[in-house]
Every structure is written in C-alpha cells, then in structure tokens.
Length: 448
Ligand SMILES: OC[C@@H]1[C@@H](O)[C@H](O)[C@@H](O)c2[nH]c(CCc3ccccc3)c[n+]21
Image (cartoon, rainbow, N blue to C red):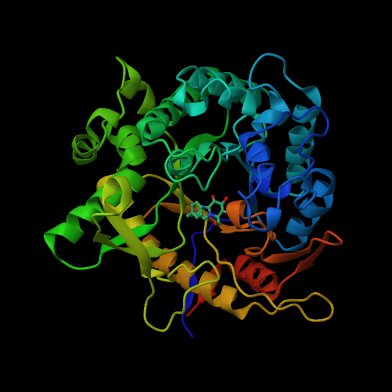
C-alpha cells in the first residue's frame, strides 16, 4: 500500500452554496433571487422542485457546523445569498441577513473550521435582473457595494473570499436556458461574461483598498476538454470550447486580455471592454478556486450551437459514468492543475469542488455505503497529489458536497453529499464516505 501524504497545512474542506442548502427563501427580510423566480416558474425544474426549503440550513446551521466538526472537517466553503443582504439588490441593507452570516462565521470560528465565503453562487437579486441583470454594467457597481458590506462585516473572520462561483454558468444562463435567468440570447451572453469579470475586478479592488485580512480569489469551472480526434476541425472546436469555458475568465484575470481566437469567432457579440476595464479585471488575486468533475471529448459539429462544437463525457477505462452521466477521468484533474502551473503563473490553488452523484441506497437506518463515491474521491485525491509532486501550489481540497442538496434544474434527485439528507425529516446521516474522509483528514494522506 502506497501512502500519499499531503502538505502539513493542507486545508481539508467541504462545500455548499446558499440557494442549494439554506431554504428560508423569503424569511427574515430576504429578497427574491433569480433562482427563486426560476424555480417558481413552471416546467423549469425537474419534478417541480424548488429551493424554498432545501436542507433548511438557515435554521439548522449550528448542528450542521457541529457535524462538520465531528467529521474533522478543517474548512467550510459556503456562499452568501446577496438577497439576504440587499433584498432589492441595492439601497437598504437587511440586518437579519447579515446576522445569519455573522452567526455562521462565529460557529465556524468556535469549531476551528476555516471560513471560505463566495459572494456570488448564481443567485442574483431579481430586482437587479429586472434592470438587465449582468447584462447591465451598473450591476458591477451593485456587486462592489455588496462586497464591501460583506468585507466590513465578516472580513475579520473569513480566511478565503471568492467573488464568483463559475461565472461561465451565468453566461450559460443566457445561452442555453437551463439555468436562471433561463434566457437564450447569445447577443448578451458575452456582455454578461465581461460584466462578471469587471465585477470581480471591482470587488478585488475594494478588498485591496480596505486592507482586510484573509485572501481573495475567484472559483472557475475548469473541466478537462480533449479533442475527439486529431482532425483540425475537432482540434479547433476543442479550442473554442476551452476559450469559452476556461480562457474567457482565466485570460482577462491572469493575462489582461480576452482569447483572440474566441473574439474573432464571436465578432459583434464579443465582449467590448471600455477604457480601463482590463486593468480592473486583472487586479492580482491571492488564489484560484478550481471546480473539477469530469473530462469531455469535443468534436466539430455544424449544429453544435454558437461554438459549432459538441462535447460528450470521456470515461477512462474501468470507470462507468456517474449518476450525472459524467465521465470519470481523474487524470483530467492533474492535467488542469498542470495547465495552471505551466500557463497561468503557478498560482495558489484550492480545489473548491470535486465530488460525484452516486446511486446512494440507504439501509433501514438511512445509512449509505457509498463505495463508488469513495473510489471517485480517492482517485481524484491521488491525481491532486500527483500534481503537488510536480510543483503545483495546491493548498486545499473541498468536497462537493457536505450534504445532499438542491441540484439546480435537476432538483433533489442527484445526491452529491458525503452526508445524506432525509428531506422528509431533514435528518443528516453521514455516509460511509464521510467516515472515510474523516480518516483521510486524520492521516493527512490517501493510500493507493
Ligand atoms: O453539479 C454539481 C455542482 C453544483 O451543485 C454546484 O453548485 C456548481 O458549482 C457545480 N459546478 C459543476 C461543474 C460543471 C457544472 C456546471 C454547471 C452545472 C452543472 C455542472 C458541478 N457543480
């Protein structure tokens, strides 16, 4: 048995997001978000599920933090619901909303768990969407105002801040229609991407000017894309997918420019930076958050939408696809980490999401022996360890997810947690993977 030990101060964490776990969608002064609106729109969400109640984390947070402590977790990545702070997206701050996150970071401090807070995990205030949302440049200033309020209130106790979670998905919410706000208007999608980048940069500048402790970064959706064949058509299609999914955000932030090939491909709907925008966007950050789940094979497809590209899951031999139909390919994680080392200045990196939905079969006590999930997590930790051995500055790993939760357009069917949630009773029942992860944390190692 080969033991793969991690660096001494490696952060072993778990991840959630506000809309997926909190519930209390309209309590204590919280305003409506675009995901509240989307879920309350018929036929948008499988089974008519909504995040109205979710895991009721808003009321059960102290017990959830206590369970994290019991499982030996060292870090908790959560997101802040903008509409608990600014119910209308701007103007009056809602004190009860601030109080909830104040209590959360205090509970984490008492439990010795590092706080890793994301400002925007997709749940934009509906009031701002009514004014154009991320397609409206003013929203970047609303975001900077919201960021300042959060830095002022929680900045003394939050170790890691992320501006956005996976901004490309917000862009997709304007392209494909399966995510809030559920538009299909390519003409604004890349203006949205630019404003997300600009909002990120403005928030980083507010953080720098305020001299807050802690570190700030952004979390990107960096799945691994490989061409289906070495034909020029497939290779170029893969490049377009990488430009859209990776470089649309990585390049402005780390290289102060948009990917030229994509700009030419997009033509008139490409981002139109104003004077000074790229300097703001590329304000240096302290770390990059990486969400990695799967590898995709990409081919040229004339009917493949805006990018004329189609992607399908790549499964390494001996792996089946997951509950989500995602190919399992741990080597893809190593490849992404090495790409960031080789081409983006070898930044400090946290794996902010990695995990899998699995066909969890509970026994009569609700206990789930999720061996597939353990195999998935173990192999990806080995892949992460390989990258560290090759000089990648990987500082931590956050499992998606701490507990089963609302999986966006798919509702509650897919279960990603290392802790099971019985939604009928809201009972939390750690799965086998939670005890396995506790052992990994204790040993600070995984074994081949
Ligand atoms: O799908 C599992 C998780 C979501 O629950 C998180 O909220 C989100 O940050 C997240 N991102 C990814 C990577 C690919 C993806 C993006 C958007 C929707 C589904 C999958 C997987 N996940």
